[in-house]
Image (cartoon, rainbow, N blue to C red; front, side):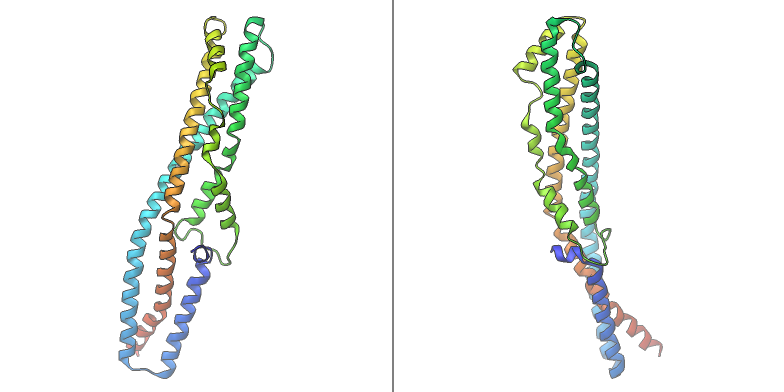
Length: 252
């Protein structure tokens, strides 16, 4: 299956050349008109198969579009979390709070934000979903020579486990105590509110990435449609020279 997807254009060209060779042999042997009519019938049948396969492949394309939308959502959630976390660290973690009573609580929140940011470091692998999807889309990944890059990226995607983001929870006993302490004082209530925003952003990011992984698995389970499409195109490419030969014979 992967060989067919990795060598789409060479296979189609090879089938076309084989068909051209066969049509040339028919010309040289000066076969009867009946043989050309049979070749024309084969062209019609293979063309029908190709059309049906193209319709089926359209369903896969629609699924790919759904994955693209989910990628956009995951990136939006990732961007929101990164901005919130960076703003929080810059505003509250670079220097100690003037009041010693709140320093420990703020440090606990800063440490948690660092942990959450570290746990999302794997989102750098998200572009692999985009690259693999674009190269696996029908006909968009045609290459003259095969390459192992596709297989390597798919292997990296397989190793990317969204559940690893769950290494940390946004709110635990320590952070709840820190938030409760900071919210009790008007001067630090805003810090607690900012952390809660980060916690919500983190949870949304987890949800979107988990959904992204599910969409990718769904798409991969139906990737065989692409192989069928390439094979159908190979059959059509093989029969096309015979159809051309039939037209030439009719004009003679």
